[in-house]
Length: 290
Image (tube, rainbow, N blue to C red; front, side):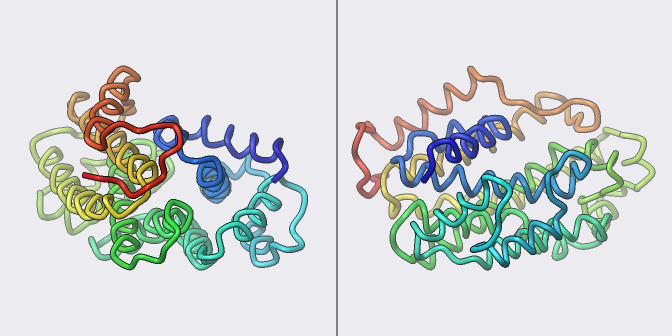
């Protein structure tokens, strides 16, 4: 793999998600580079829908080039993806296509009605990332671990949705399902006006309770991972869980304040997770112990 191409993938991840970057940066080199490539491509997919004016490709162009990956040129991501699939034979292309389908739905499905609809969306845009990562974080095809990876991705997406309520509203999107809003007596007008009251708090807490269940399932198989891979997944989950803690500290103001986990808190989380996993030496890549 060309060193400059990999540096571009790494920089995309470092700029795009400090939490993910710090969670995965201590993986063995081959696994770490694969994570950079996966993140960089997912970032391109996301930006093609959310930031179309600055994206180098439309979502349709990305899909067409991905389907013809062997011939795709003109951007560092294409040789990076060719290296990725050549290096990890257990990696399937279907999750990448499902990811693009999920992002495409953001162009047409702007308001969600049911939790079932929302769960399907969370699978498409985030559960698929778990499917992508599994074959690069471990060398076997483990069914329960695959299901856990999907669950963790869905839980993380719920946290994203909670954190980005205001930003999404400004884009004309409402991911909080109407059935959940009705259950708490909270209206679209309330949401558009940024009303934060007991109804809103209860609604967000219920949404987060579903995320917490997916997080729990997502962390249920870490002892079967290579040690540093399990540590990376645990760190990513801890950093994401802390985002919701920050939402609470912000008084549930997800309309005007972005929940950002302070670096010092990430440092504490890092030490806590590393303690739970035991000492990590510079070369170990054996199965984790709980």
